[in-house]
Image (cartoon, rainbow, N blue to C red; front, side, top):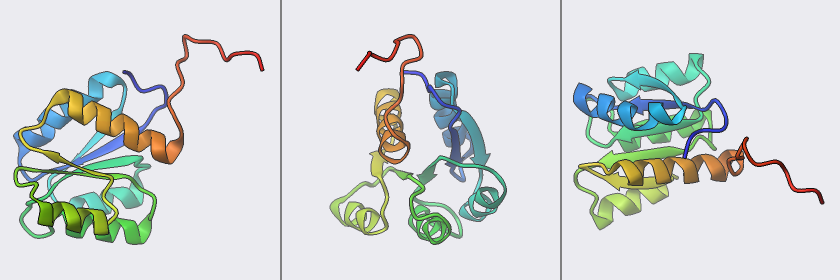
Length: 139
């Protein structure tokens, strides 16, 4: 399940180990990764870097993941955002859906769940991935 396009994923978490864990999951699949330590830093990055998807921790010091998503969507309404949290209860999931979050992934994260969710989110916004090894079928 490797990236067939050069997608950039912004990973935002105030915990360095969590950022690096998510990077270590998605980078080997061919995604370009950019790391941010806060919601504020993530908002700065989306103004200067082409970002295709954002993975965000819910609980960060100043801006929460949801607050950051809402501000990002003011700039780019279709930017897919995936929230990562240790407390994915029904109330938080409802808030996330209202904020147009693509999905909520519980912590501790599963590599397979992260990759599956990333591929689905990118596919929904940018179209399904193509397999460069498989020729297009003649119509």
